[in-house]
Image (cartoon, rainbow, N blue to C red; front, top):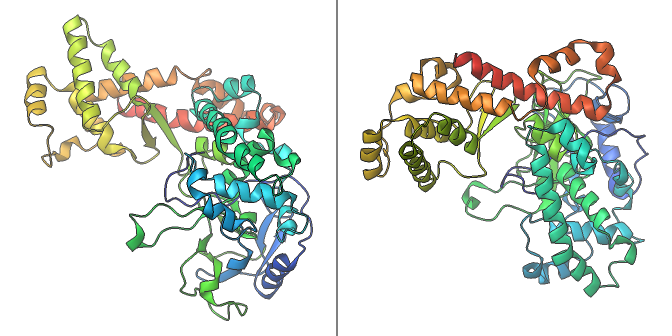
Length: 462
């Protein structure tokens, strides 16, 4: 429900179903483009139920296909776009998705919707694999410690609140536009998952950085592509034409273009990217993961309050505890930590380097130094190179910093229901692994990737 502002929404999640034949004018136009170019929708040679493959070799920068802007489905292009614009103030929400979701609810039940052929390409809404559709016991059992159950619980609460406070009253106020069959919390939850996994967000221009992010939209054909961290295609929004040859009679500014970013051999699948996503984000938002070690963007989180807890373990007297809370409050004032924040560690870098460096420094510095530091309201730009918290520099950190980081990692590992060896045994035994359910396999990959990063930190801080 709350993707990173300004980051393109996911392009596509993995499907496991039969691919229907494209129908309708927009679908026919895109099928014609595919024939004229080098791509085809296929059920063979793809990582999921179907995807898009190259019919012949493609070079970087070449156009794969174009999607006319007239085929995009958004709050502005739907048949009730005028009403949604007039009621924009009443439809504001935390997610920012309500207008698009209402557009989908309306078009789904509109007999003459021009997007009906596009809806026929959707996965079955009742078979989405996002963890929000798993039984709560299964979700907690399989994903304990990963951060996913907590994220899902927030999503479900936000969805329910949004539906009953904004969406349902709007539909009831316009019964001629929304039939009783679409006034359903379950359907709304399914559409939220679909938007989470399939929609795109057009990036702002550089001079528009201060503006609110663009609204999400559905991009037919582009959402057929599966995802890989090491993707070979990217959706271009800019008006400048990319690639050789004519744009199938479509002016560049009137279409979005999927462009190759790497050489793609004939018969190979074409992959888009959702951005730099860790496996826990992939399963949370899209319902799948990349198996270890394929996801080079995978990360592990150390909750900020876990570092505070680890620091408290080292205090003995009440005065020491009070001083530690004073240090923590000061870090909060500097906006380096928060009760619900996390330090994010990747395989090759600390993504929250400034926050973690500041936290280790403040919590570990001598009391007198902290008093002086606090009086100066922080260190400004006076930072030392030896305090740099890169992965390669962790062994060179001060002993107190390494100990606190190590203790924090150990506490984080305790939040999982299983240890690393158990995960390794499952992954190394192909016979046992193949007997696991699909959800068990996906959850195992999430846990294992995170634990490998955390155990790397243990080695670096030993």
